[in-house]
Image 1 (cartoon, each protein chain N blue to C red):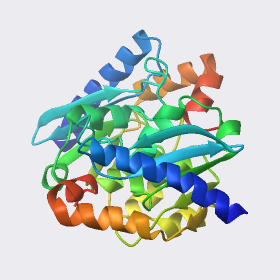
Image 2 (cartoon, rainbow over the protein chains, first blue to last red):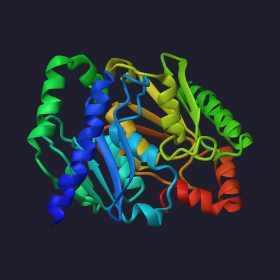
Image 3 (cartoon, one colour):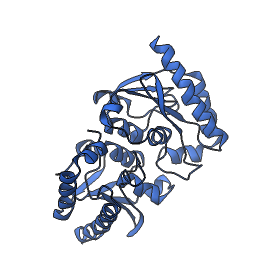
Length: 150
Length: 150
């Protein structure tokens, strides 16, 4: 049941990633879920808003708006890709207890560090997420490198 | 000489913090310096833009715009306060080699972790920075707690 829920919300994160792609952006999406409800959604906006900070997870947290610590405590963050150092740091700042990731083959953030700091990580290893990223990285390596500081 | 430079740029970060305060915001400021030039500046925008992600350092990185890894490699980030997990994560993502902080008595981010990951940290322990934060935290503890996920 839990896995089915995770897949349901990951589909929404994938929908965000595809929206980003259709806008000419990097196809990474995220949703923030609390009590079975999506309370924030977003996608990478590097290209669209010329943004250095709006990775999918950050755009999603910004969309959810100002929340209290007790709200974040009941949240699960879904991202189509393993969160980078910045987005992992946001998870730690707000003490989001669970992060579900689409895949970590295209890119792997500081997952071990997140776990050491008490975050539960679930990797769905989604073929769809892998395909989205692999295609993009192959097509636009310079943009992708810029996005992960390489 | 280096210390004098650090103090000069920290004054600009303090100027940003005061600007934020005058707007009704949380008084934390930051500047990004490359080759002796300020290429980005910002302040905490939680109140002003109802933002969950625009801490001073993030607002400053956003102001600097999209940069390549080779640009960040020559940068120093100045912040009036020890960077939180999110902002420290942004420093790691973009491999900013040096972070100069105004103080870490009011709040201390993951400084040891940043050092382990190769970032050089300089703490100016500025009385002015401490006074700015101490006054604010005393006056608006709820807003401050929200900003650091407590």
